[in-house]
Image 1 (cartoon, each protein chain N blue to C red):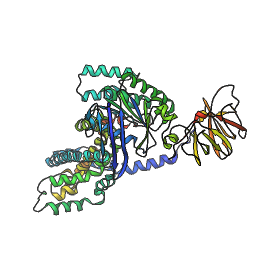
Image 2: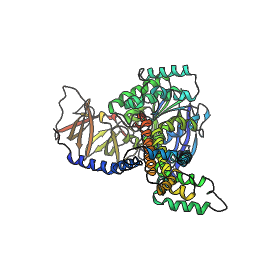
Image 3: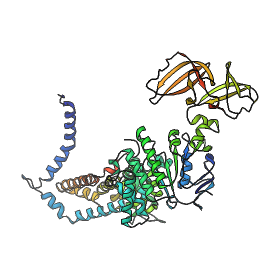
Image 4: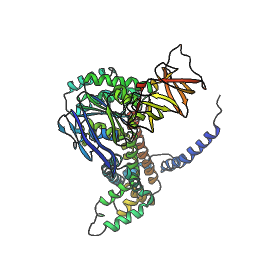
Length: 351
Length: 261
């Protein structure tokens, strides 16, 4: 039994299942992200842990206690919302101290805790401000401090950064991870942003249409996606239709060009799809690697990387080149060779 | 240099004249009770009439009762609709608009027909009157409260408070009411202004009130009714200024919730 067990939980609204058979066991101090497109059931699942939704089936057990049917205010769970949800009528300090006031903690203790929390979120002097006097990023920091002040057993974050600017978003997610690790608090983080999920999580749960698609460390999810959905949703993926030439030797053929893959090929003949991440592809011929000839279709300069689209027969391959000041960028219409190593590709189990 | 906005000013002045001339005329007339000189004689006479204070006092009582009952009815209803039954909102809104559709006379006769005879006789108690006033104030009260609730995203605030351990009582006391202060005040004072000047209900149900009193002296005297109506204007304006004054510094309630800045 783990610290937080979500046992085969499901939620059905008027015969339409929103979440189906969600089974997850979170260890103490772990940060687990729920990642998926909107409407995939990630927020509903989070709300079942928070107590705002009652599961239609299954149970939620927190440190050995069944909390499935407990009211939200009796769960010892802290929550941060996308819309910040700070109380507009209270100062920052009173917002942070609200949960402690409810718990009838002595005044001095509350004041001390509020001070600590303000320092933790690096806003020590803003305790007397009102929420409307703060920026969005600051408001969300306060919301985080407010949720943590009561020392909850679990911290739940529901798309906490979605309403913020790109730069603040990156800054704050690092901050959230830092605070989470420092306090060692068990955390569930809901997001639709794969970069966010991959960068701060111990484990990621990828969800689609109310079901768990895959659970694993960010590295596993990205490099070893278990289903076509995960492969397509997380990161950019090239898909190349090939015919099997020699299954045992890992040889495939794409429009007459021979390719070798280190992945196991299950079928003996016919067509299959070869999967390639953009960073595995290289411009130019590299000895001992697979080589495909194509035409440059587009060159997009994104700053740290340059994203190049190459048309190979009827497929378009996306490849990323790290930016360097000495780089000579290919031009549109150039004929070029794209190389990739045999172990840089995989074949999805036929589904 | 910007051109002087001639037309805007012309329209503005016409509007001001349209609004203020009848008012000034009333005030002027009310001051002329003694021939050839301005005086507050009419006001003195009005204040001397014990009926003035009696009817005013009754109206104050009816207004207070109406406000209390209307708050107890509307705030939890609007809150619950916002929180749990958003689909019901159009129907609730429709119901609250009934007083605009059904004339007060019809409403009163309905009340008298239904509650004027056994098994349930309410017309001999103020209950029927207050009930009628609550209905009359519904559009103003409900709309104020509802827009107040929507302005602060009360649903997420409720959930935030719940996850911090707050009970329903605490949520209402510490989160809902403080953030609805301005909305509640405007609902309260609009209701107050309506009940203070109401005529139909009080007259037909035969309860003493300020409206029927004004009507009564209007039929009998010349100057005093003008003085009384000037005072009733002042009461209404006083209420509105009070809303403004009490609502100042409540900027927190108007803050955007969500969205990057």
